[in-house]
Image (tube, rainbow, N blue to C red):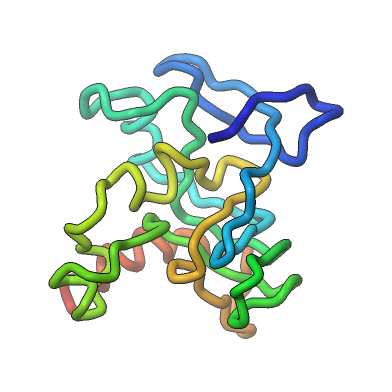
Length: 172
């Protein structure tokens, strides 16, 4: 997905775990922008213990190396696919643990895309197969990109996209 290139040829850079002990810089080219994708330049990413546990394989062999964790993200829209009307370049947005959902399972049809059962976890989560917030950029389907309300300071809000959602979900 993210072909390593030299720094001079790169569009972006991520901090990745190349194995469960080694954390290093990784320069890469952006993946092709799909028609309904949004590319976000990351301004802030939360630091969650889940990221460390996943990358260090504390829960078993569940990481695809190299892996760039980070699932609490605030950024600025930098590019949009040709079918995107909801977002414009320069808008501040938030991204949480999920990047996509099937749209057709019983949970998605109820609007509970976080509980989607019609799509594998590797493709649903913000990082794993894809890069997360420990990168300069993130790219995902518009369905899981949320506009940052103008009265919120981006520097203090990223953790709401995990801790906030985790505590809200049981109340929903």
